[in-house]
Image (cartoon, rainbow, N blue to C red; front, side, top):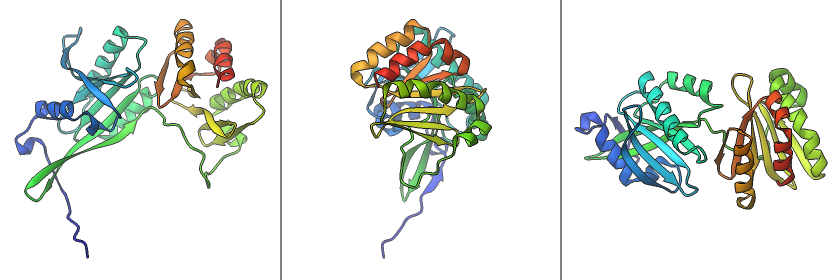
Length: 276
């Protein structure tokens, strides 16, 4: 029978190491964060606020990751600092996608509450960095605990779907967004299907997932569009020219809105849907 060893969780500080060591470990091993192919841009980057951003990294699509590192448990001041540095860097390069990353040994419940409040406006990821003793050696394991960017949902066999009336009763604003978008989709495509879910809907066109609508906090919704590389630049320029906030990840552009703002920019959404 194969022998299975139980790993012992240990404190990084108790091993004689500090935050600077963890920063350097991440800089030397960017893939450990599980964010794909990213590379170091700078570390200890001085900010206009007087502080220093621990790590700035860049992805293959030139998206930027503002990373703050701490030992122990997350606290309010560190969360605020992470978002502050994200905001400073975003203002410097407003056309680039920015994601705030908080790395800590323990992500506490209060952090989850903050994410729920900010998730419709701040792309932020929480990653636990834990050290384990394995015999005489120690190993690092990085685990993504929370990601405010809602990953595209895939329609799988056996998925539990909900009727539109269920969604309308639970999330009336999100249901209204779907009602506004449906005639536009119907005007351009005949081979589409809308799967209503507990907190939104998934739109398939020609059998492929092309759109997603999800309920967010504060009576907001998010709409995700599957945008090809061929059309991405044109779509982003259209959104920028109309001062519409968005982010991009895994081939999807996500926009935060409510029924009122959707109607105000309905021609923008019509153009995006036409080119799906």
